[in-house]
Image 1 (cartoon, helix red, strand yellow):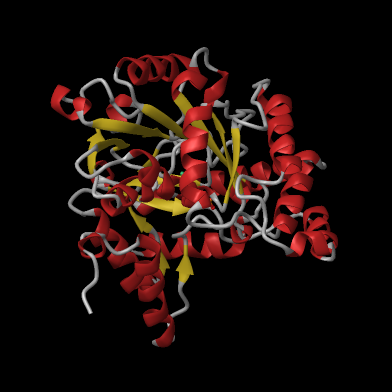
Image 2 (cartoon, rainbow, N blue to C red):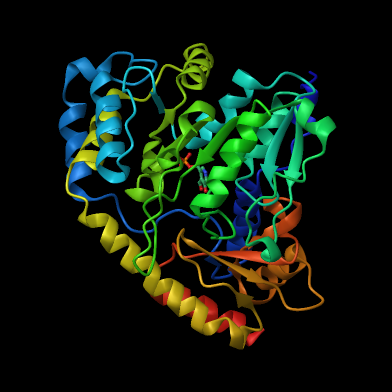
Length: 384
Ligand SMILES: Cc1ncc(COP(=O)(O)O)c(C=O)c1O
């Protein structure tokens, strides 16, 4: 049996690899604390779970779902965009249901990238922006990102020969893993750049609801002209603690929405309609869980930030997301420091280089661990 080259070319999926190492340690009897994956530790709000329970009893929901999302789901997404951001999108042609945003990101490559085409990918970002390209036979151009440029991916330095063969560009703010946020001026320049170079710009807004100190992340589609060149991805995963439910949506440019929908209709058969009904409840029901979640992560952020200096680590104060992006002590690499933490004190963190070349020298600490375990992990890191 011979697998395709695209499999051989894929790096191991970061969190699958971390899970494997964790299982090894646990089997050796180590009490491992994971600050690795960003997976909310608190449950989905009760009213959303109840909505799923009653929707699951509706026999109409037991049949194949709509490929693009039930009309009532797409309308709820459009209403939410209007209420939350004052952004108007047409639910019929400018909204598409996704089985989590990971699925949409991966399939965008099938819709837009031919072998040899480039995608402009942030120097640190969600790994699928890069691996999705490998699977489509495409190439990645890493846009430089560092503390010096505020972790705002530098698209302007992209060489002309890359741009001639580039089809898509990913941005994502609030940013995973750096937690950086972007201002309107940066977004406006990105829109002009995408327009000038005929690129589809994808703004991945996975952390749209997670902001601190009064900061509420904006929508990219609020910027003038954004819909001419861009789609934006929203997910129920982090906003409503629904990572396991696999429900998200894309909104924006109708040509791109149609292209992604065409690919998806040939690959998957949509999101279970009862899950879409639960997502409607999430988007249209009470929103107080979001404030409670932001308060929880803000408290944990403060806990981690106050302890980092005594652990020899430094980080910028995050304004959003569920991560602290910390510089490792002098003389350590990301992977080396992460391995040392697991081997010596049983704490898992994500090595920064796994998010792209500009992550070398950093680790990502996830705030999705109960306070007592988080405190214990910090004490262990300090003891190193
Ligand atoms: C930036 C970013 N995009 C997309 C995803 C995938 O989210 P979903 O659960 O919607 O597939 C994640 C998950 O961590 C993420 O951090």
